[in-house]
Amino acid sequence: MKIITSIMAIAFVAFAIVSCGPNAEQLAKQAEQDSIKKADSIELATLKMNEQLRADSLANAQVAAQAAEKAKQDSLAMAEKIKAELKKEAPVNYTESSFYGRWFTKINDPSMGGGVIEVYWKEDKTTDIKFVYDNGQVYKTSSKWKYKHPYYEEVFPDGSIGKASIKWINTDKFKLTIKENQDTENYSGITRIFERKR
Image 1 (tube, helix red, strand yellow):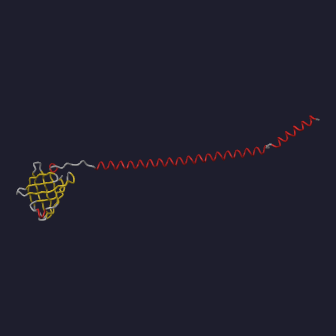
Image 2: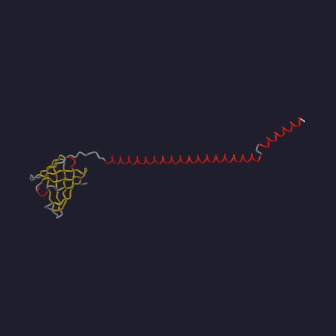
Image 3: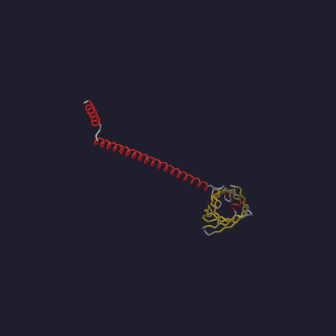
């Protein structure tokens, strides 16, 4: 009888243990829920990772754009610097030899009116001068001359003296301002732009 009672007690305990634990359906549901949670966790992690990658990509693109803009600005600044350097010309030391050759200037004289003066400056420090006026008159003369920047002086065959100041525009062009000549009262201050004849 004791044996039967012991067997029954063991069976009861086993039944109680089995009946207290989850059954197969519950285990399946639990496994499904765990699987869903795991999938949700993976999806969330993937979303976060993609979001981070997108943010990193945008940040890298912005850095690249800033670098490209800086490179562009640096390039423009360098181009402007080079252009400015190219514009700089070595200063020209204008001397008497700067005049050598044939030159001309348009005139509007107080006494004779409009016309052109042609001057041939020679290395022997003499000139041949030709005045051609719009009214058809032509007048020729010559002079002995000297120049020390910016002052020019010449002496004509009749002994009269001409004095002027010279402002060089470039090697082929200068502005002459009359200071004194045969008719200083009417000519002083008159300017003439001479250009080299080619």
